[in-house]
Length: 381
Image (cartoon, rainbow, N blue to C red; front, top):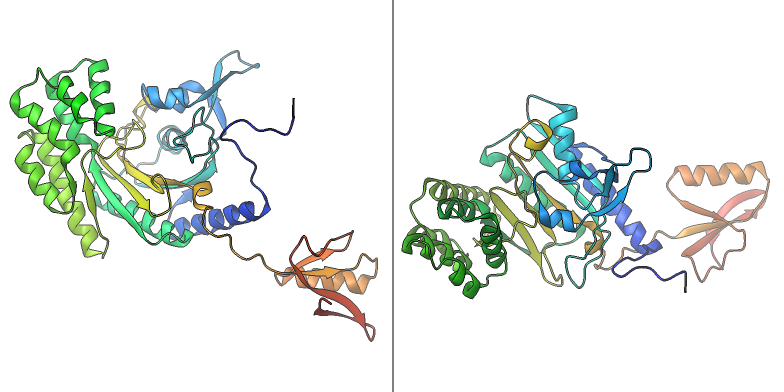
């Protein structure tokens, strides 16, 4: 067996990509800090019960499990960081007011999200807990826009939906759990024939509303068509009102909006507004977000929440930035040389001591040479 072969959809991060990943991570966390977000770092592994906010079969399937040899209990490698942050907000910080939290770290999944995906994404995101108003959703989307711009993604499309539309009609339909899950899966895939079969026994008004969801995508006229096609249920009306209010606020900020009322939330814990960003050259969404109220209920404290996340590794398909050129220094115990090297490094220069460097393998364009008794930086010959 060749010991250097990695599992499928698992890959090493080599120097150029690693440099870009770390640069993006630092820049994004600094951006979030300027908005007032505080960084948390949940553990990579914990008891499996804490890794799900509810009975989330999809997240359960994506989670690697193992047995803790100290306690004998089942543990899991996190496949999503949001449930962990919800636990921190609900059970550890326990703040009365709004909490703005951000995170950055690896997650591991049992299966990839797509053919071009990796099973060890570098997830980074920002979340707001304790605010139920549309202002929190606006801030999350604004920060998501700023995040993508910082990573170099500027030409993207924002699609907004509302999972509450389906949930409201599914509640009225009184479907058993398996039928409801099947209908939700069909909606995500825009499988209209499957939805037609699943809604055959519903009232004409309710059936029309569910079948209309996969067809409700496009510009502002989507909300007009949805009000005409969907049943007059209080929760449906409230969801459409929220979408209209969000659209007006985003347009006022110069952000273009499209709607897809069958938009997949990406995770089953979402409860309301969902938004995904799509960009040319990427097979799937480059950023995902939405509202997940009551996400901390399992941890003893139900709070409204909204936020977004993105996978830094997916964004490294962009051209890598040029690496800063280094200075080559000879190996020596000369204290004057050692002080010059320290001074250069403190000033932000990369100084590589020559322990057998091949200048064709690293980016070096200058060297330190002793000239007239002084160590000087000169162009590399």
